[in-house]
Length: 169
Image 1 (cartoon, helix red, strand yellow):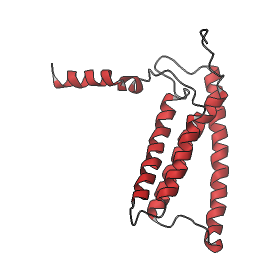
Image 2 (spheres, one colour):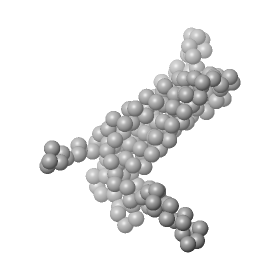
Image 3 (tube, helix red, strand yellow):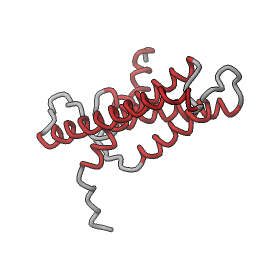
Image 4 (cartoon, one colour):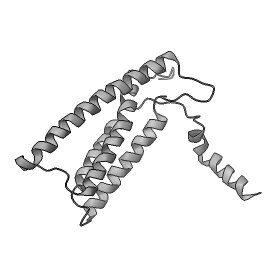
């Protein structure tokens, strides 16, 4: 058995092939994105302003924040279908759900960005907290990117019909 064959067998044994070849059944994530969003906010709050003198609080915040970032990426992959599979295009309902989810999340992110711009302009004169270090700004950018990945998945999950109950229930 060659090394390439062993590596190929490892990919199929781990289930990564389902992600790579998009064989995963789409799921509806209704409440998990709320937990991921909360972890993003708590993680950012814990690590904001502490990058120059890392403490245990900073590392816990870092793990929460970037773990939530990765969770947002995986929820997007395993959530409702936004990308057609090979030989299996999106149907009309999926296209409609995708369009509504992206439009709604675009509006939410735009309003959020406008409110944040006004806050950043007023924070210094009013004595409120605002990002000061480059690490705070970089983390804020990653947070906005995670929200941009998470919101369409969350909105599309709520636009989907609820799953049918099993006949055994």
